[in-house]
Structures are given as C-alpha cells and as structure tokens.
Image (tube, rainbow, N blue to C red; front, side, top):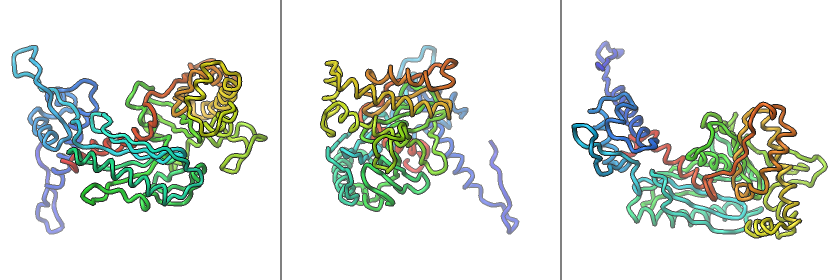
Length: 405
C-alpha cells in the first residue's frame, strides 16, 4: 500500500516512520499468532493465506521471528506439486519461557513453560500457610523461583516474565491482593515483597491474578466450549467465568467467589465470617473432616476410601456434591452458561461428585428441561494455575513479539 504522509504544524511533511513501524509490529504479531496458534505446523505460504499478507512480507517476518527465538523451522516437506518443499513452522522450544508462580494454603509452586507448551521446570514445596506471614511466605517463594529461573537461564533459555496466582480477591486494575481469607492476608501488593529477578539482576515483569482464573485459562488449551464456568476445589473454592474464550472480570476482577455463596444460612461459620458458605461443605478440608480424615490428609487417602465404598467417605462426597450443585445452580440461573468444568481437587473427585451435582442442577436450574447441563472434569492437570500463569506470560510475548525480537 502507498505510504501516507501528514503535515506538521510547520507546514512540512511529518515523518511517517511511526506509522510504518506500527504496521510492521502489527504484521509481526499476526505472523507470530498464526504460527503459535496453529493446530498443524503451517508453511510460509499457509501463513500468508491465513493473514492476507504477501509471501515476501511473511518470509521477512518469519526470518525475524526465527532469529529472535520465537519460531523454529522443521525439516522441509516434499511439495505435492512442482516447486520448493514447504518448511513447516512451529513455536520455538526451550528459548523464550514464561514462569507461573502460586501461593496456596498448602503449597508453594513454580512452573516454567516454553512457547511449545512444554513444561521445562516444575517445583512444588508443601507447607501450611493458614494465617501466615506474607513477607516470610513470599520470601520463600522468591528463593524457589530464583533457583528455578537460574537453572533455566543457565540452560540457555530466557525468562520473559511471571504470573503469580493467589487464592483470594485480586484487583485486576493494579494487581493488589485485597483479601485471601484462607491465607489470612489482606491489603498488600505481592510484587513489592516478591521482587523477582533474572539471573543478571534485571527485574522480571510480574503480574498477579486469582488462582481459579489462571487455572481456567489453562483449560483453553484443550477441548472445551467457548463459554464455561470453571470451579477450583481446594481448601477454598474459587471460580472463573469464561465467555467466548475470554475471562469475564467484571469491574475489578472480584467475581467468581463461589466458595462464599451461602448454601445453608444456619451452617458453620466460614473463614470469611459468614455462616454456611459453600467452602464449609465442599472445601477439601471440610470434605476430609466429614470423611473422618485429618484436615491435611492427602487427597489420595480420600480416593482410596471412596474406591473401597467407605460409608463415611461416600457420605462426605455426596454432601459436598449437593452443596456444590446448589451453588452452581444459582450461577447457571443467573448467567445462563450450562457447562461446568470441575478443577483442582474436584477434578480428581469428579467420578463421585458428578451424579449428585447434575441431579441437583436438574432440580434447581429453571432451564434444565431445555438445555444439556454439561459437568466435566478439568483437563489441564494438577495445579493448573501454574500452567495458566506461565501461558499468560507467553501469550503476552505473542501479542507483542517486536519487544522480544
């Protein structure tokens, strides 16, 4: 397209370099996304067809992405017709990596992913962080993260940023944690205490988010509907609303606190101060107590009892499922999204929860006779918030590849 020019206040033509630079960045972003998001490795010709750019432009931009370590070339594939063999393009492995961090009630975690989605480092440290000191806990997480980042950068990879997942209300505007009842934390900016850096001392870009929301984003890499409710079961119970493959955050990202939906106004007091919250029936510690197990017992012990048809464990699972179904019915009645993805401990317990959850939804959801209520186990794996956090870092790289090449 012909270059356009504008006139400056002096009457002279203003330079158009800024506009050309912006166009190059946009085109680079289009090409990077076409490669990274492809289900089958595309050739340069495929990328040109997908983006509407000329083959010459795509070839130049692909060369930049390859030189910058964001895209890699596979061995050529023989052409079906006359011409040069096509060179498939894929996201580069073990070059640029994103770091996912998490503080949960019973563990600290660090996970590193590359652009191909491979986990290149993973470390979890168990602990008990109820009513803990944030400075001490985040200081320990910083030590773990620095060790992991040092290892991956020593192996020739480049850490480009991190996401921290926390089980509480995180302001999506400024990243402040407002409250995390199960941690006993409130009104703090974790970034000030974490101070995450690369091995050369350069600060790593760090953002903070709710753990259920990051875990929900991890599900988008699999086969899920474009809209769903993700429910994360652990000591606390959190949720995220995904609409058209985008998180619905509301005004400040404080939605999704389904664990504090009241399912019995006469029930036990919750850590948030209210009575009868869902967490007191379906949170992991509540289920363990109802199954006559220690609060901190491994989930595997509960599963073993369930497999053995233990009466106490089955009763605890059914009690949790009915409470969960009641809270989910309120959501579906309000929002109208009929797919529920059970994550965290709920994914493991899904075989023992699903029937009662679906039955309760059938009783309480007004539209149940007219829609298929879909309740399924999450597929992103254990501690999905770590995966979701690392992927969000890498998504920001694909959204602005010019900053990295």
